[in-house]
Picture (tube, rainbow, N blue to C red):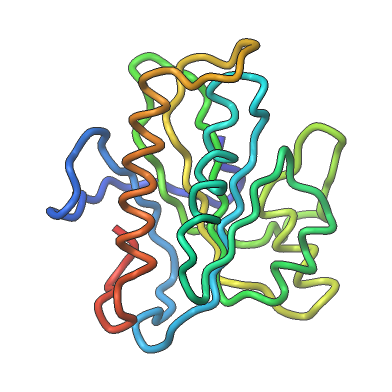
Amino acid sequence: MLGSGINSAMVPPRPCLPRLFPWRFVPFPVVDETRVALNTLVIGYGNTLRGDDGVGYRLAEAVENWGLSQVEAYPCHQLTPDVAAQLAEQDRVIFVDAAQPQSPPSPLILARISPRSDSAPTFTGHYSHPADLLALTQQLYGRQPLAYTLLLPTTAMGYGETLSPLAETGLQQGLRWLRTWLEAPPDARHHPL
C-alpha cells in the first residue's frame, strides 16, 4: 500500500502521547533534522465526500489554523503534478492520507519515503503517489525535501461528509503528535515518533 521501497518495523510510541493506536515507523537513512529549523509543508489529501477518505484533508485544514512559523499546510483532494513546485521550496514534507479500511483497524503509520527510481513518475486522474511527486520535483528542480507519509486509520469510505469514530480518533491523535513534533525545538527532535 505504501509503494515501492518501503519496509516496516515497529517502534514504540513516545511516552507523552496516549497510545490509542499503535505506531508503525518505517526507518530510512538518517538525515540530521535536529540541527536546523526546517520549512515544512503538510499536504493532507483525500475526498471529503467519501467519509473517512477525507481524514488527511481535514488534518491539513486544522494545521492551516495553527499559525506555526515555518509550517505550511495544503489540503487537496488529490496529488497533482503542480504540487512539485511547492515541494521544491520546502526542507521537509509530510503527506497525510487515509489508510485503507481493514479489520482489525490499521495503526497510524509514519513512513519515510523517497522518490521512485524504477520508472518515470506516473500521474493519473484519480491517483498519484507521493514518491512520484518527489521524483518529479527532483527532475524539474534538482532537489527534493525530506519526505514522510502519515496514514490515518479508517473504516468507512462510502458517500458522506462525516468521519467514523475510528477516523476521528485517529485524526485527533495525528494532530496531537504532529503539533508536538513540529513545535519541538530542533535539538529535541531525535526522530519523528
